[in-house]
Image 1 (cartoon, rainbow, N blue to C red):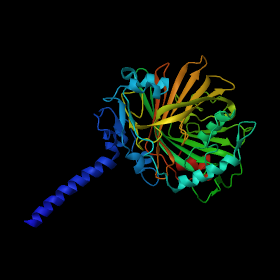
Image 2 (image 1 turned 135 degrees about the vertical axis):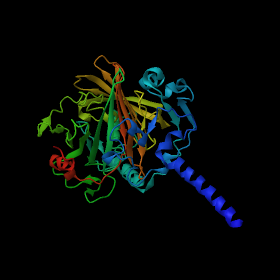
Image 3 (image 1 turned 60 degrees about the vertical axis):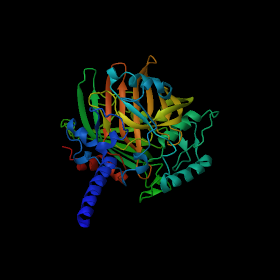
Image 4 (image 1 turned 180 degrees about the vertical axis):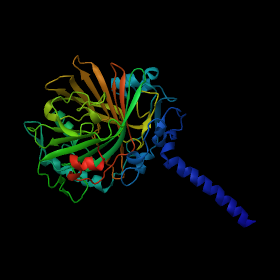
Length: 453
């Protein structure tokens, strides 16, 4: 009798434990952790495959970043929620950039969203690599400076200017360098689905990988890193990134390869392999205000909020403002196929952000990009692009997670043309380092790896 009772209790405990683990660790259940009613249109990770052919397969297999999920970030306590089936968005009007507030407060036009506020102080400790990064950050106070061309000098790794002085005439450009040198891995691979949606609701999907390698600002020790710098770096690169297309078929094998040099006088290089003609072509990087190919809403300068070369801008400091920002968000893709928005049920933290207006020295399609930066990680969760008439035009938002080493990772990104009601949204199946080398970023090696026809 005792044995039967023991077996019964053990079985019940096993069922409870399995459900507990499933609830707290399976990404399909991540969106339910708010305790609020779930919008049935919102999709998470594997569920996205219902709408995106090829998602969660091959290169796009949903998995954790290197080293696994960061439990501190993934299991945050929700203090308040606004939006879908929660408190009214109007309560946080002053905690959002105005264009974002307009989007979120008009669900009949743009779709539903829910902002879950979590406490910032709970998002730590941040590990040994963060401590190493911050130790060099302290040394940067004496070692780093901005030259006459607005270029960063004396830099190895860490945040270049950790204590911005609001009276410093160079504060704006220093903040932008802090953003460009945020706490991130030496390299990363981001398999992504890019979804373009027009005012009629028509969608198209492109699957490609974004790979990037940093030549300065390398925190993790590996065989190619010496004191934060990549060696050898004979061509004096600042960074390299590539975007090989996997789907649809007519774009498969197309490879974009972008080089930026650690030299303000040397223009960026852009190369593209076009499989239909089996040729490599050099593209102009003069008009980085143009949208990227494919009719998307990102430009070469506004991906991840800001991707530009600081020498092409006059930077103006806008001051500080308390905002709710998704700087320590879930490490999962959140997507609503019926919406123009992205990341509909994410973690946001209340942060006193820095604002910078980056005005083009030679405007062609845009006058400026207004960015808002977290004061510790220097992410750019919000950016507003303005057209030649000075109107708010393209709104960019990036929700970023943190891997086990607390490195910057991405899981949702959108660029919305609010004037013509057109959206480009990116879902990332995962984001993390892959220990790549400079040799992995040559066109010939990329063509072999992706079997370009």
